[in-house]
Length: 267
Image (cartoon, rainbow, N blue to C red; front, side, top):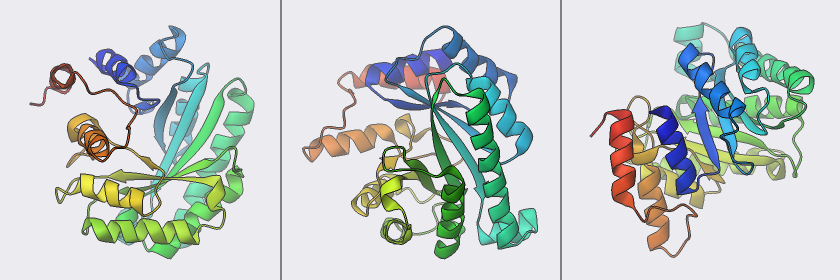
């Protein structure tokens, strides 16, 4: 089912596809190894893999993507006030250190094990919507200090609405503030990852793009984790109605519906 969904996303025209969390299970790891070893990833497509900022998971993740041509390494740790206090019982400097040490290790492994790959870093201050804006920027700046992005080789800073805690206009204001306060904006691709707790994930994504975001992460029909993510189908067709080519092909929507229902077992 995962292979069928991956192949369909390729046919739709997506050029960046998050293919899994390789350290989460052997199934995830084996699937990613299969599509790499069998040369099933087109040369113009970037696969993305997810890992927490924890050393064993980072090492397992890099091991998994060895041999791929284009890889986005997506690392995250929660930065919200609630999770710092309740989950981690750590202060701001300690949580920032988790991000910095994780990215340092990723950079070391990139330079030693992924020399034949095009590698792009994505960092997410998880639970961004529950994080103080100045602190989210502070942690992101510390990550950039380690990775040293350039305008030609940008870092992806992904600012997720892990929990949709406010109206879409507030989320857009937060994105605009981040865009205005990052010191190396030309070296950064601002990505958003809207969830749908309030049922307004599409509006949040659209307003975030108007506020300066460069990239959106979502799922077909919004069937992502927890409350779901922004629906890529709705987002693409909304752009199309406004005269903007989304550069993905939903001309056979019934086929996409059938494949999504079969693969996710959600109707």
